[in-house]
Image (cartoon, rainbow, N blue to C red):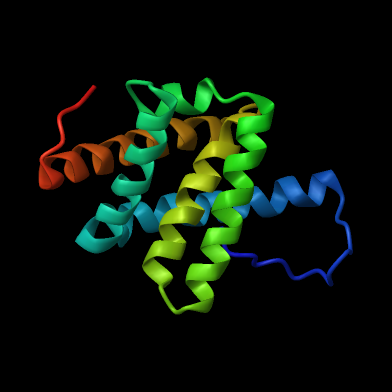
Amino acid sequence: MPDQSTNAPGQNISPEKAAELFKERFVDLIADMGTNVHKDPKTLFLIGSLATRLVEEAKKTSWARTKAALSRDAYNSILETLRVQGNQLAAKGDKKASYAAEILAISIIAPTMRADEHIATGNDLLDSMIEDTIKMYRQRAGIRSN
């Protein structure tokens, strides 16, 4: 996911501040998915394509099950890959692909913050939205579901 940190390199923020910043970005992302992204077939296709690849690599039947099955190492590895790729895509000006990577990264992180009722509810909604993009991608690409 694109590095949107306002901190200087190497500067740490408190876990409370990190949770607050995540929640703000999460809420903004959910709102954007509902208001704007659903009208953008290219972004939906990119989200679905990337999510489908992760679901198939994990040999799971859904996005939520893929996330739930991640080991700590897989979780960290996928987030790092999404961060690096998202930043590279953003640097190249491919904002839609970068945003797709950010959406999936935020979705992967969200279950770790389920103690917050807003994030817990939003996580289920985001999983459903991502699952819809997977279905759309598979239909357009002629891929059968697992």
